[in-house]
Structures are given as structure tokens and as C-alpha cells.
Image (tube, rainbow, N blue to C red; front, top):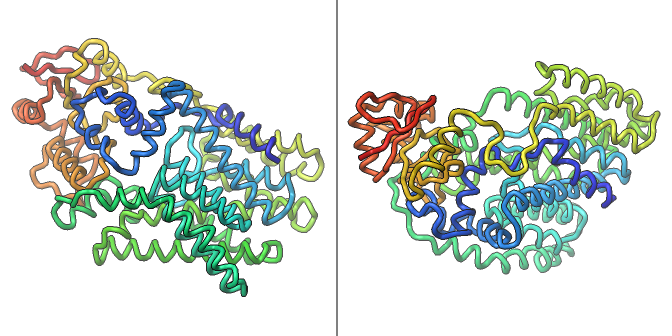
Length: 536
């Protein structure tokens, strides 16, 4: 088993088309570079806020330490492989708990790694880039699978790692699944094992997390007006994570379609599900649902900070992982043992790529053909050939991607062109006023900026300052945090007059302005789609 998981983890980046940077890295890598060198972009306001203790702190320290051994592209690629390995191991173990069949478990792992994530709140289980969020999530998934197999202490240790890398994921998942395990012990008459859960699971977690809890408790008091503490992160910057009314309709349709199919499978094939897995899964889904209801109530009716910032809708990724792993395992194993009809393989084969089938081009058509071939020959060919066919099938859906091991961007465009010019032709300590949508600028140009939309501080007092900078960048005098949008701020930046944009640059001591607008009376140092202006 372990050799199969290791092999799959090693080839996955090349089949899935790994990329060193995608989007989140434009926020994360500069923070790491600041931890590597305290002199990196010392004039950058966001990096000065991110250097303080917060959710990114331990991960950034860890990455900076590894940089003493090798460079960031190697470190990121290695941790991407580790993340894939952890998710694969967690999925295999959970699948094996349902049906002890190697082929079914490996095929289930492939579905989870390559398939579309059906969840709400903008969470994706596997992407082509490495982020600390997915590393922490991977540790939490392995912790869950260990807990389901009664390996309480190992589960607790994995949760500790998850919590230090990403406190929100680690603590939330620990609470949900240890509570589920407690429910399982209670309803199955195993209450005598509850002290063992406390002694080997809950107690070690909280003891080792005491420094983390203390550091968060010691954070300075917020200096932010009333409801803005909730509105800025939830309704302005992170509505794609927090605000259910902002989620795309397609996300709801696909999630509830998946949920309906999975629950129908739970009912229809209930005799194939071990009772323990059913109880643990039902309990976890119920707790996630309760937290989602509480978070929604706190967001729309009675403002409570903690239930909102927990981002409860993102917990649906755990619901997806549990149900997809279970359903896929039951179907593949049932077909193999001639207990279920082979046409049911359509669910794990085509449902995970449902969003890609239309408009997929020649590669997609070839993939569809291979998908039906896989279903047809499922019980008529060897395990190795079948697994290879399944890998080729899913890889074709990633055919048009581009593998990127070390570049700061995948494709050169007018934004990266001006950023490269700035890196080579402006003082290293210069500060730039840039459009809020130029998320690559800080990293690619290697220069400090006033602010951008992507890079969002953790501390409420700091994100209040970010909010004020966004309102000024967007040239918006009345700036309600619960209504203002990213698009309005971009448009507002383009509507600045010469006097207002130069006044803004001087307010934040910027040396240069980058804008898509041509200002006749300002000397342009460089221009393509964007103009670079030097402020005297």
C-alpha cells in the first residue's frame, strides 16, 4: 500500500501540472521572504503587519528555517508532494476502513486527488499549487482517519501539527471529530473508553497547544469601530469564503446534487457501510451543519465575531471528503464483488469532472472515451492496467495546464512586463501606489506597495487600516464595508484625477504611481497597458 501511495504522490505533480505560484503565493511568499531577511521590503506596510504574530507566523518561521537548507521552489515542491501524500494516506485509510480492498482504495484516492471538490465557501481540497491551508487540511484529514481507526494519540499529534500551521483548521477539525468520536463511544455503549479519549487525545492536544493559545490570548486589544470587525473580513474582503449569498449558484447546485447522490447512496447501500463509520460520519455532518447555522445567524441576525470568523461554510469540505470517499469505495468494491451493477461506476468516474465535461475540447472527448472504457473493462482487466487507465483518464482533464517549478508567474503579460521593468530600473527601497488588483506586483517587482486587495492582514486593527486604504485607493468617500465591492474599488482607482492620485501617493509617501490611466501632465517613465509615473 505505502509504495503505491508514495509512487502516486511523486507522479501527481506532473500529471496535475503543479505550479510554484498561482494566487495565494503572492501574499504568502513575500511574508516568508520577510522572515528570511528582516530587510526585505522594509517600507511595505502589509509585510510590517504580517511580521507580527498571527496565523501565518509558525508556517513562515518554518519555511524561513528550511530556506537555510535549500531554496523556496524546492521547499514548496517538496511540501506539495507531502500534502498529496498525506491526503492520499488519509483517504486510503478511510476507504480501507469501509472495504478492505486495495484496488477500491487506490481508485478512491485517485478520485479525491483529481476530482472536483464539491463544497461551499471557496475551499478546494487539492489544487496545483502548495499552500499552508492545504498542508494543514491534509494533516487534519490524516488525523480524522487515525481517529476513525481508534489511534487516538497519533490523531492528537497530527491535529497539533495542523493547529500550529493553521489554527482555524486544526482547532475546528479537532473539535468536530473528537466530539463525533465522543458521540460514537456514547451511543455504542463504549463509555468506558471516554477516559482514554480524554487522556490520550484531548489532554495532549491542549497541553502542547498552550503556547499557541497563550499567544492568541495575549494579542493587543482591537481598535476598530463596532460591526466593521465583522463586515470588513466577511462582507468586503472575504465574501467568497464567508457570505453564503455571494457564493455562485453553480456551487450550490453541484454541492446539493452531490449531497443528494451521496445520501441516496448511504441509504441504498447502507449494508455495505460499517456501523462505526456511519455514526462518525453522521455526527460530523450534524456538527458541521450546526456550526453553519450558528455562523449564518451571527452574520445576518445577531453579530457574534467568533462564529463568523470560523468560516463555517468551509467545513463542507470535510463533508465532501467523507461522503465522496465512502460512496466511491462502496461503488468500486461492490462492482468488483458483483454486488452492484457496473453502470454505477458512472458516479465516481464522471461526477468528479462534471464541471469540465462541456467545452473540454479534444482532450476532454478523449477522456470521456477512456472513462467509458474504464467502466466497461472494470472487472475484465488487471489491477495495474485498470489503475493506469484511471490515471490517464483524469490526467487528460489537466492536459492544458502548465507545469511551473520555480517561476513567479506562469505566463508573461503586460502586468508582469511592467513589474520586471520596475525590478530592474527603480530603487530597491521605493514605494509604489498600484492598482488594487495587481496582486503579483509585490513579489514580481520586488518593491513595497501602499496596499492591494489580495494581501489582507490578520489583526482587526490592521485590517481596519487596510479597509481605509482600499477606500482611498477606490476614491470612495462613503465606503460601507458591507456593500463595497472589489470591482468598485478597481473602477474607482481608474477614476482618480491627477490631483487626487498624486495627493494619495504623497499621503502614503509613495515614490511612484502605476495606473492604467494616462495622465497627460505626469511624466511616464514606462508604459504598455499600464503607465509608470515618477512622483517628484
